[in-house]
Image 1 (cartoon, helix red, strand yellow):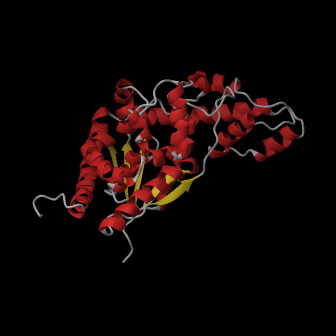
Image 2: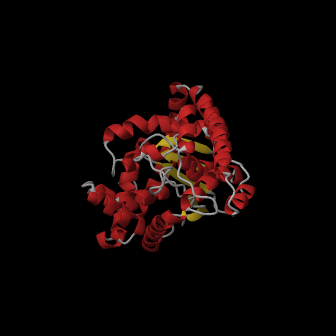
Length: 332
C-alpha cells in the first residue's frame, strides 16, 4: 500500500509580500497543489518562527494579512477540497514545542551551527545584535513543523535543503531508537529565482522597500519603480537586467527577442520596461481587487477550519511519539 502523501510548507509573516515572494514561494506552491491533488496539504503562517528575528508587533500585524494574500493569490480554490488546510503556526504551538523538545535529543549546539543557512542568518543578526537563542534553535522548530504532520513532501528552494536534511536526520534517529514513527520527508525542490533589488543591491527584500516591488503598491509606484530600476548598457548583460528578465518571463512575457536585440546593441530597454510595467500593473491590480473582496470573517473561518485539521493531525502524531518514548500515562 502506497504511503499517504502529506505536503507541509510555511510562510513567515514579516511584512508586505513583494513580487519575489510571489514568484519564489506562492506560485510554486500553487503549482505543487495542482500537481498533487490527492495529497493532504498543510500551509501555515509561521508566526512563532517569525519571532526568531522580528518583534512581536510586526508578527501580529502581518499574521492575518498574509493569509488573505495567499487566498487572493490562488489558494482559495483548493480549500473546498477538504485536503488543503491553511492555519497559523501558533494555533498548535504547544504541540510543536512538545515535539521539538523530543527532537532536541538528537542534535548538539555544534551540529546546529553547521547548518549553512542558519550560520549566515546568525551572522547577519549578530551584526544587528539580534542573534538570540531562539534563532539558533530554528532547525529544530522547522523539523517539528514538518514531522508533526508526518510530512512526506516539503517544497523547498535549494538554499533550504540543509534544513530539510536536518529534519530527515531527526526522523531517522528517532525511528532508529523507537521504531518507525515518522516518514522521511522528501524535498520537492523549487527553482531558486534570483530576484534582485530594483536598486541593484542584493536580493529583493522587505527590509529594503525602496528596491522592492510590493503586491500592495499602487499603479503609479509600480511604473516609477520599474522605470528607475537598474538594468544594463546596450550590449551588456548584468545580474540586474537578468533579474528583470526573470520577472518578465515568469509573468508570461517573451524575453528572447528583447535579449537578442539588447545584446546586439539596440536601445530596447525602455520599451521592455514599458511592457514589464504594464504587465505588472495588470497582475498586481487584479490581485488587489480580489484581495479587497476577501473579508476578515472569511480569513478567520479559513484559519479556524485549518487550525482544527492541523490540531487533529498534530495530536495523532504526538500520541505516537508519547507512546514510543513511554510518556503516555494512561497506557503505561
